[in-house]
Image (cartoon, rainbow, N blue to C red; front, side):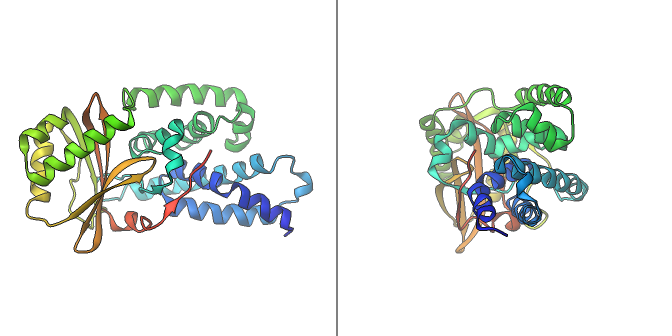
Length: 291
């Protein structure tokens, strides 16, 4: 393969990973899609390719769609709620507000409620601003059909996404207030920082202790947190995960938990807690996501 083709793939690699990750919610699956994309790209007659970026995105999208459909069957057998795989991200992701929003654990969880084609169209249109003709070529639909899917998926996501994005200061204040309250066992402070209708979703993958269903309401969430944190000696710090601050919990020198939060009007309305060791395996290296 020519150096030019190799350079083209390397140039767009971070973009392709981001597309696949946003469609799949799994870095492991996204890396597999990248590998398959490279193998397909290596066989392409580049004299027939007018736009390397568009062609590569088309390959990655189709492969990710195939992976999404096969994953759906495996997800039915997953123990408890399935949450996206968290990633340590570079500071520039947080600076790109739209990108940070699209890769947040809360948004990726919402995207899990879309059908595969709807999710692909939403990601390519809303996050990467691709034209309807280009998306149509990637998902094997007509541009008119893609336009309708985009409208439908956008409405679906808008109904389920957080009502208002907090400022970085507001998010940081709520997170540190939550951490202080949990660390000291201050129930009143915890009640102050959690919204009455807070939702807690935990993913242990059947390996670590976790709730098998989402926990709804402040009192139930506090009881659950008291049950899993009481008497446990842990080191907790704040890291940037999927473009936003999150809590990293280390127990006995091993990464145990990553907790991401949704903050609205100064209170925590959503807690996404990943404990499945398979999903924490990549949190020793920073990932570059891009649009």
